[in-house]
Image 1 (spheres, helix red, strand yellow):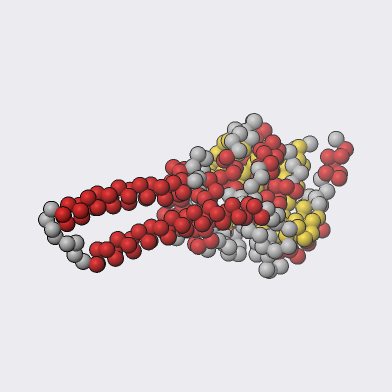
Image 2: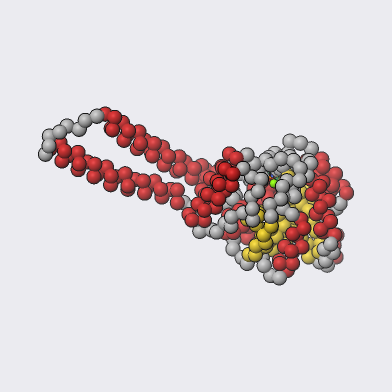
Length: 319
Ligand code: UDP
Ligand code: MG
């Protein structure tokens, strides 16, 4: 029997942990040909998420529970899940039911047809603030233009991945992970399934606008060096313009003997160049910061407690 691991990162999700379990169990029960484990990750929640998950592990031995020592962010939680998942295929899902569990049979059947990755894509962004949608669109346009990975607009983390894809993801050495990009970067045979946006079943999103903005910058810095080239491009343009201006000033002074007037123009030019230099230093700083984090090579997460699901100990050993 093939085992499918469902990895669910949770942060302050006490309202949704149980609802998710009830919904996913309905779907799983319709798929008797597979073994399932549900890997809940508690990403340092400040509410009672951990207790709720712990209760579920008592109810159902198919549940694994990874309790992280603090909030490390969704990326880290996801990585922990992938590292601990034992399945022949791994499904990644949000716990708030924004990733509809009823798509699961379709994901699995497509995986069985030989697609290594079957991912889902939201076709609309209803209920989202306009400015957020606009920035999201801009982000996808930018990253797809600048980097060599193609990140589909609206693609969710909700996906099934074959064991070999998961192993490739785990083999990647980088600490600072931008999964949306890495999922595409590893390649393999991908198939997309589309669905309509679903509202959160309960609880609140933990992504503020600025958190998402930082996430987007992270993605761009992780996947393209283009912003670094902007410095050189600015440099070349400004040098050329200055040279032309220099010739103009020399001619004006020597032939027409007309002294250059005005400190205002001078100050604006100095301020303008100062601004550009600061921006460029900032861009370089982003990359240096990334390198610093990679060099420190701290673990992406720390596991405080781990409760294993029973599948491996039971059914799989019999095979
Ligand atoms: N999440 C997490 N750690 C965090 C933030 C979020 O594990 O630091 C989880 C969260 O519990 C949920 C998923 O990531 O299962 C997606 O988060 P959320 O629903 O808040 O994001 P949105 O759907 O609004 O983008
Ligand atoms: Mg959500």
